[in-house]
Length: 343
Length: 239
Ligand SMILES: Nc1ncnc2c1ncn2[C@@H]1O[C@H](COP(=O)(O)OP(=O)(O)O)[C@@H](O)[C@H]1O
Ligand SMILES: [Mg+2]
Image (tube, rainbow over all chains, first blue to last red; front, top):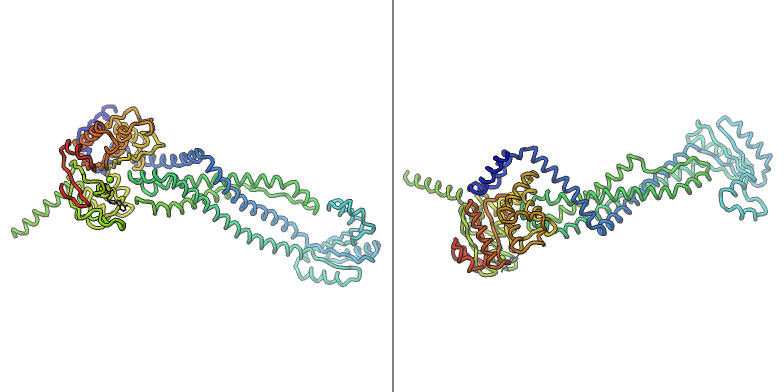
């Protein structure tokens, strides 16, 4: 091995073969030691080097990186936070949907015994699954405990709340026509002040949800563009500060791909780290929100549990932010390198 | 019939002439919109293994001529051939591969200050996709040749001007290009160091490399006794 090496070197120095064109020379090396696998290894090393050196560069200028990543992760956490809030609200309306319940608010002059009789008679209806009577006192007590106006209400001399009969129709009546008919008949009875199909409220909520979902999609699209531009601008500044290096690399024969590579990896890291930070921001916010939300859920007697990011969603979040980082950088590099002299 | 034959002979001669020619300028003009014709109707050629100086007053167009070879600028008219390949008409994606066939040396060295000597010299090899071992071997050999072995781990800042220029030279030759082009390589060096650097270039020529050195240092050029291409206001007046 040593002998071969020495021969190689003397040949290099003494022989006019040195003057051979570069391409032939490279070919000679290929047959001598560097085979295809070596080239492949060199290529892999190039990528690995770009991956880690770009991360190292980010760490080396922490102020700039922290600023960029802070802005990006706020934008990303806004977007993903909206997504999560909507997912939670969706879950809420889905729960509501199952209970298409009718509330009958009785007139003030109707007595409690009369109300009981009315409730019993409704219970006879074959289309009804269950009936629940809420007396004035019960309503007040419930209101006191959950509303937070407890002490204020004790001041009141008379109980302002009406007697309420909650009617839950059977599932067979789920179709809207049957429900509407039932509602009509309740409204016509003399004891009832007003009859309210909670379904209406649910429908309204659902259409509000649809609108907010659409708005959130638009908003997320805008935030996505913001991420794209911020990442791109960071790369533009990075490119500016390393302009000399780019020029020198070009002058010793670097291709566009070679010059772009470390910058694309920088874009990837920025997006990736921002995605991870955004995940933490949103998760911490949800943890803070958990207790109040569960209190609220208790108020409505619901078994509502706050949704956090699932495994798939976490991967999606990080993948999307990394992709946006790379994409923003790529767009800027396409433009800037086209306009960097020399070609 | 005889005429045909002689034509064929001529063609053959000119073909072999092209083959032996490393660098050929054919009626090259460079015009800048702001300053007009900086180079006018330049024609010359360098054979394989030839060494030549490019001289002329400051602003004569020496650097511009070298930039045309590096394809940092495009000529407005004419043809430039490097080892038979058309530089003036090269497509953008071809330029990096053409540049790998030339070793460029600059007055201001153009080294990466935040990289070690080793990394600076290795750059062309990394770009060309050489393997780790091959890179180490070649960088060592190149640094050895310019008398800088043992300084691999130093940063350019820690070196003298002459040493930095040697790093630049090592980087230019590490890829074993058939032609070396230097723009005022000794402009920042004192005469003794300048003579050293010139001897280094001569040693490359002796192993068959074509060398073109732009310099306005007339006394140094006179000492060396090589071919001189003289530019005057963008025109080639001798060579
Ligand atoms: N990029 C440019 N744009 C316009 N004019 C230029 C440019 N570069 C050089 N020149 C002009 O070309 C002329 C020759 O410059 P240069 O080649 O640098 O001369 P030298 O290297 O011989 O001193 C000068 O007059 C200079 O003003
Ligand atoms: Mg000059």
